[in-house]
Length: 197
Image 1: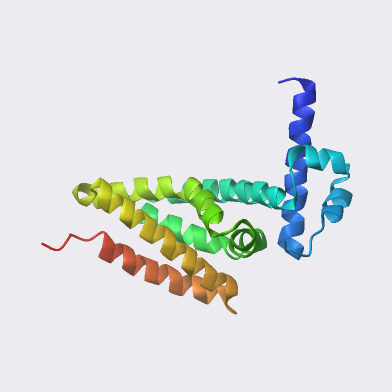
Image 2: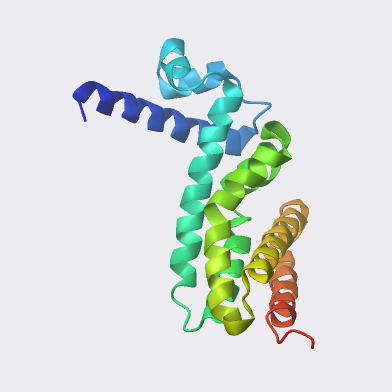
């Protein structure tokens, strides 16, 4: 990589970091491009070289947040001894991340409303669906036909998204996490049990 390319990449990552902090603190709507430029100490041209508009910047921020959170959740999940335990630990790890203002504001409030549900879901699935499918395949064993695996994975991802929204909007996040994790444990037990004959 050339020095110029390295500098451009560093500027892009710096802008994403600054925008992440501002969006998390103020929200997307209350964060102006001018605020990002001032806080980052870069020119308007430098920002628009990397991002066509504020929405494109939010998308880059959301992707970066999802990459970080997915890595953290997977790292925690892999400490569990069995596939089902890894699913449970991963679910709790994700739900705990909802208390983080960055995750809550960017992932659950701003990204779905600004990027639109379809784009929001695509990015979410890109970072989590493969790991969930793999964990379910290991936990379900012989019951994991491709069709069943795909449906189970989407159900779990969808349920986790809804539980996360409840936590994000709730008055007592710790209680909501306990309740949500308990419900998800029950759901996993029912979904990954033997299929009815």
